[in-house]
Length: 178
Image 1 (cartoon, one colour):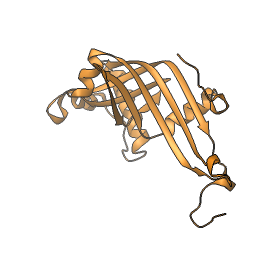
Image 2 (cartoon, helix red, strand yellow):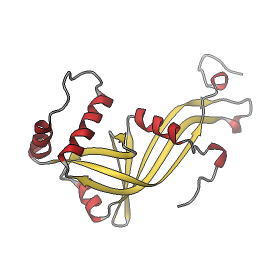
Image 3 (spheres, rainbow, N blue to C red):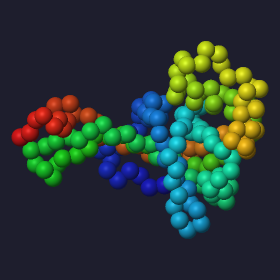
């Protein structure tokens, strides 16, 4: 794997990367479909140092992953524009993480239950008063939308992260100009 080119923005603090992945809400799954790239935005969780996501077991995404499980998963958030008196130095505040690995479907009911519970905790915290029962997860995996729903895992083989932090005094505000 190649290193981050702009090393001044590289993030190597594992705790910072983990915190970012735990709170970010959308990731983009990049795959190779024959000779073409194919990228799908989706909800995900970062737990046990792995990326997990779920979805209907049919469809193009699953066919592509079955043919070639090598994927990259990109998570990024943009925090605004950093202004500068010199227009060419105007920049963007952001953080991004790219994870390379293989996508693998999860058949273990315990692992699938844990992952789906983590997704509920992340996307609708406190909404459900009881944890997901395994029986519900097993039924969910086998009958939703007329076909099975599958949980997937990406074990990271390589992770890169970059950040250009917010500079509060320089952030663009439409009410001010120079």
